[in-house]
Image (cartoon, rainbow, N blue to C red; front, side, top):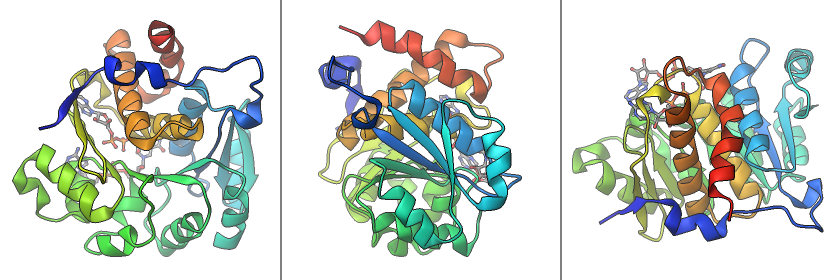
Length: 273
Ligand SMILES: NC(=O)C1=CN([C@@H]2O[C@H](COP(=O)(O)OP(=O)(O)OC[C@H]3O[C@@H](n4cnc5c(N)ncnc54)[C@H](O)[C@@H]3O)[C@@H](O)[C@H]2O)[C@@H](O)CC1
Ligand SMILES: Nc1ncnc2c1ncn2[C@@H]1O[C@H](COP(=O)(O)OP(=O)(O)O)[C@@H](O)[C@H]1O
């Protein structure tokens, strides 16, 4: 049976800055952007990662997207890569990297994921970086480590783990984490967080206001921002899903994904000892 995701389970593990903290040891997060017409999703994830406390956040983008990305960011930094090897070099300096939101359904996304997997960064794999492995999930799983996190909605889950949902969402997420050998966050009204060691949690504070384009990109950035700060992936995913729900519920009607990152500080204040 899965636990109900609740702050009592992870409140003491939240990362708070101390007197000796500086931006480089507070967690470095990279977010891979798509091309010039597909940069917004990465910016949403990056802003969420910064708001949840990562000290330094960079959008990593193809060269032709760099002017567009840079013109719409302030504290989030931008670096361009011209090849998977170039991305690997940039990611070596990161504690965690998000890949998938508007990354592109093409071979470049497969190669970029492989490049990231050669680094020591924890990976949060979402959206296009899941869909591109439709029907060949094993190729994805082969490159992942146990601390990596997959964040599928049900459509993406079915592409990577065909047929598993017939077991029910909780059992499916647990089986998926075992098969993939990493963490799986099966998104939905009751998001399930599953670890490869068999642990699982069901989130109870989901908000239907989250049914809006880009909210999943924000969640990927939240998870990335927390693992970058050194949280274990299971705890980071649990915290991120809960903060995401609390932020959306606090805002309510009219919520769009752009609102979510700026709602995070109030939720964090409520969790502070
Ligand atoms: N601001 C931005 O730039 C945004 C970019 N986005 C990116 O846009 C690209 C395409 O997004 P799409 O929404 O078309 O891709 P999806 O894979 O989310 O949707 C494609 C199809 O999957 C199914 N599906 C979607 N959500 C489902 C669910 N919860 N349960 C069951 N089936 C579901 C539906 O049949 C849908 O038509 C992705 O790369 C995505 O990351 C989106 O994240 C939205 C925001
Ligand atoms: N009805 C709902 N109730 C609670 N949470 C929801 C609901 N609909 C969507 N969500 C949440 O919103 C997010 C949507 O993510 P996703 O489908 O990946 O969107 P996108 O790709 O547009 O960013 C997920 O975290 C999901 O759990």
